[in-house]
Image 1 (cartoon, one colour):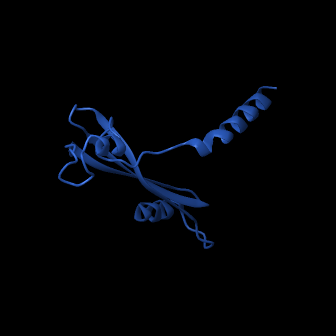
Image 2 (cartoon, one colour; image 1 turned 135 degrees about the vertical axis):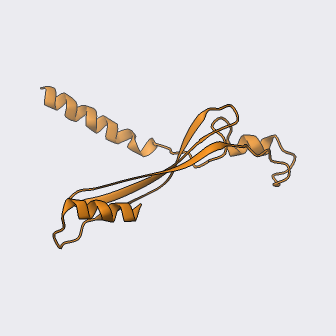
Length: 114
């Protein structure tokens, strides 16, 4: 009965996975591109207020198993209000080779993928 409830809960989560949206705007945590352009007389580079940031960091994570390897990249920075922001940049995944390899070797391949 408990396993059935967990299964049903997981199926419900699968229905909403397509609605997940990851922001690609890296300049500000609290303003969208449309808001910036709406406040400008024309969307030229001289009229758009550029957000400054500090502590810009690129975080790369990778992992591997005997069957697959993956990597993901995120930007992390602090905006004008000292608020920490994180934005997804890219991800990759690969199936491991048919030739048997050790997990440490696959971990190195995943790091190279990152």
